[in-house]
Each structure stands twice: as structure tokens, then as C-alpha cells.
Image (cartoon, rainbow, N blue to C red; front, side):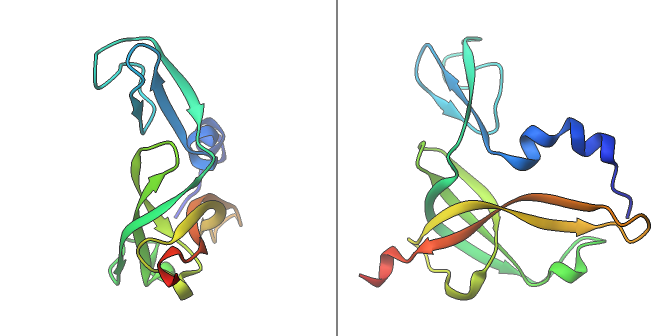
Amino acid sequence: MKISPPRNWRLKETLYSIVLGKCEKCGNIMYPYQQLCTSCGSTNVKKIVSRGHGKLIEYTISYQSREGYEKALPMAVGLIELDEGVRILAPLTDTDNIKEGAEVEAVLRRITADSNNGLIQYGIKFRVIDNASDN
């Protein structure tokens, strides 16, 4: 596997943060960011960066991976409703106590490493910060 430092640099905004789009005309919030509102068609869309907090709606654990990600198995993926109101699919980390309804936060984690040149690629994953369903 080859990690491209220039490509990672160009994509740093989307790799290391959650960028949403907010329509100034109708208030619609979109993920991922788009220049055209998916609700009203306005081009008056502003970039906003999510705080990275939300609620885990559902999750699944996958035991299959694509080439180069075999060491990441099993991989947990969750449907997360961010505090901003949008739902996203994202990988989960520190999965010891995941439960539906839990509060989650975005964290920066290692995604993969290039054994040829020693470069490491990082990205956003979510971890449980509070189990709301334990009440």
C-alpha cells in the first residue's frame, strides 16, 4: 500500500475534521459539504466544522475488509446523529462498551501505515463518551 503525502495534504480538511454545509437561505445542513443546497438549490452555502459530538443510533461489526485493511478487523461502523442534526456513517474505535443510544465524540486515530516508507495515515473515528442507555 502506498500513502501519498501530497494527497493527504490536499485532503487534510476532510480527513481530520467533519466539514458540513449550511444553507444560508433555508437552513438545511448537509454532509458532506456541497456548494449547492440539496433542499432548495441555493448556492449560498457556508462551510461549518462540526464539533464532533453526537449520538450512536445503530452500529454493526464487520469481519470482512478490503485489501490493506486486514489488520483492522473486526471493524465497527456506526450511524451517528451529530449535534448539528445530520446523520453520518463512521468507523468506531474503543469498542469495549458500545451501545445504541450512547453519546459519542470524534477522535483522530491511525487508519493505516505504509510499510514501504513508514508513513502513517490518520482519520476520524468515533468513540463512546457516555452510555445514555445505562440510566
